[in-house]
Length: 329
Image 1: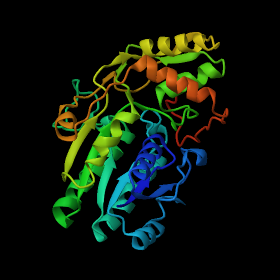
Image 2: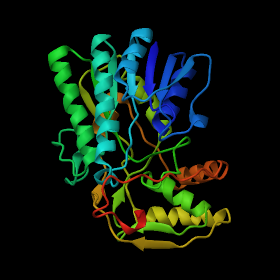
Image 3: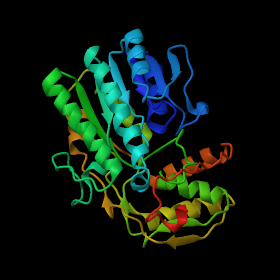
Image 4: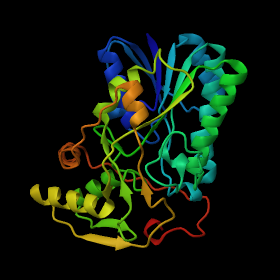
């Protein structure tokens, strides 16, 4: 089967592309390398990499016309909820407009679209979040994701678009960009530790999150190729931890490998205090099982990161600075 994968240099896209290649699919991977690295892009006889900015609507349309994929997995995004109020234009171009540029050719070529949304659509509701909760996002990132979800539903009803939606959360694994100062909290903690910088926890550190290993997502994703239509699935870990506990775990593992840094606290930011999901639907319909052991996963990530080049941390040019946090100035 010929499959398009956007964001093939990122965590989800890179890992799933490798899984698809291993299982005999022909994969065309798309990425503009703004949030990932060429070194993370898969290689192989059945893999073709296309460097492409998805804002280029005509280029996207031409690529669909050339390859006519059966399925599109749309992983590409800039997932930085906390930063999104300060980069609104970039956020909506990257997370909304780029998605719209994929929906049109999916309709034209009868390509099934699997869209990676986010639990950010739920906002600050009672946990655990279930798929039947009405989305109430509290930041531009969540708003963009919910807008795409809504458009998919309309395109399905009006024009017959085939699609499914997954809402993963706090996923970890190899090929994650740990050099981004604004997203992937465990990656940030690991990078700081490796560079001898204090681990910075926002607010009181009692925020709760559930972290999962990317390896458990592969087979459930496979079932979205030919099965189901118009379904939404939460996918991730059931067990949640405070960010204080996560910071202490990274600190302890760092000490084991000769990196001893303190934990410090900074001003809190505008974010959901408690965010984790119910996964009963994915377990029942996709056979999803998460067996993540957080300490082992963090140690695996830490060892992987130790063997990576010390890449430069990218800074964003903020579109507004009113209300920007001191630690991002």
